[in-house]
Image (cartoon, rainbow, N blue to C red):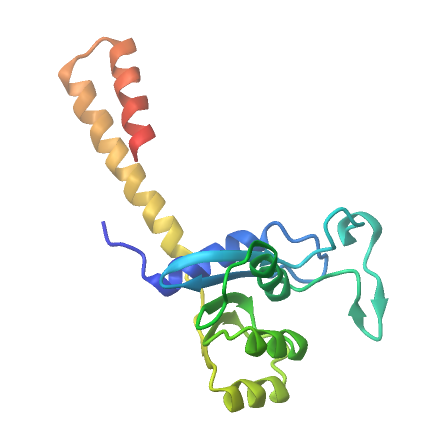
Amino acid sequence: MKRIEWDQFFMAQSHLISTRSTCTRLMVGATIVRDKRMIASGYNGSIAGGDHCTEKGCLIVEGHCIRTIHAEMNALLQCAKFGASTDQAELYVTHFPCVACCKSIIQAGIKAVYYAKDYKNNPYAIELFEQAGVIVKKVPFDHEILNDGLLSKQQMLTSITEAINEEGLPEDKAQSLLQSIEGKL
C-alpha cells in the first residue's frame, strides 16, 4: 500500500480539523508543522466558552463575522499558550489566509504556507508574503487519498476473511481472529 505524501497528509489533518468549525459561513482548518511533526492546529470558531455562530448566528460587522477567530490565528495562539516555537515552521490551511492572518503568520516566523483552496486571495497578503520571503503554495487536497486507503484496508480484510472462512474455523474463533486483525489495521 502506497503511503500518503507529506503535503497531502498535513492537508488531510487541516480538513479534518475544519470539521470542528462553528462558523456557518466557511469551515476552515489549519495545522502548524515543524520538522514533519504537527505542533498545533486550529479551526475557525468563537472564543473558548463563548457563544458559537452555530448557536447564536454570525455577528456581522462591515461584512465580517467578529464572533469568529480564524483557524490560522487559533493555531498560532495554541502555540503561544503551550510554548511551542513557530519559527521556521510550516502552515497547512484549507483556504488562503486573510490579510490579518497573513501578518500574524509572518510575525510568527512561519516559513511556508500551503493552502488547498483560493478564498478571496488579497493581493496585499500575497505582496506581504513575498516581501517576507514566505513560500506560498497551493496544494489542492485530494479527498480520494483517504478513500483509497480505506478501500485498500477493506480489500485486505475481505481477503483475510475469505482465507479464514476457507480454513473452516468455528464461527466464534473466526470472529475473534477478524476483530483482532481489524484492531491492528
